[in-house]
Image (cartoon, rainbow, N blue to C red; front, top):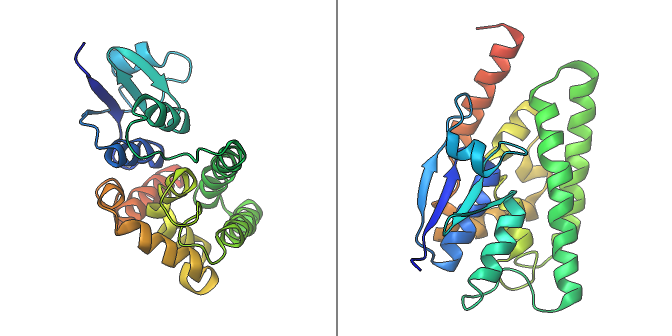
Length: 220
């Protein structure tokens, strides 16, 4: 059977970026089919009928949904390539814990920051700063979250690097001043071609989010 890999994709999505990075890390050739979420394709509705969201990986006609589930699938299906998850059971559990923390904290809190005003916005800012603080403490003095090499936790978090400028601009703080180790880690990750070619420009993400925010407030 031909090894056909299709990704239902969206350029600015941090969740789709995770899958693109994983595919690039494994050296897997794939076809990207970009979705219009205002007019979802029949393929998306058929392959992800529960959530109707991207990303969806379709491997030889079989769909896999949810970004980190897809990343784990890629790691296991192409196990002959360098692994993204550690081989040690404890370290694998540790990596999954932090990826889950990132999923539950980063996007929901960040979205509240740019989609709200007043007390909720200020509360979201404090929560997001605390989230970054905890992640920087976990990183410590390591090169990557998994020590010496780029891995599962790094992949989970670096997908949000495109949003760092939005977070600090709308939250009125400096990532470089507050979290220098995370900024250095991000720059280190961006030296990998698999990461740099998969992430969107920070200013582009900011402009898109700002436009969405203005439309919600009825400014434009």
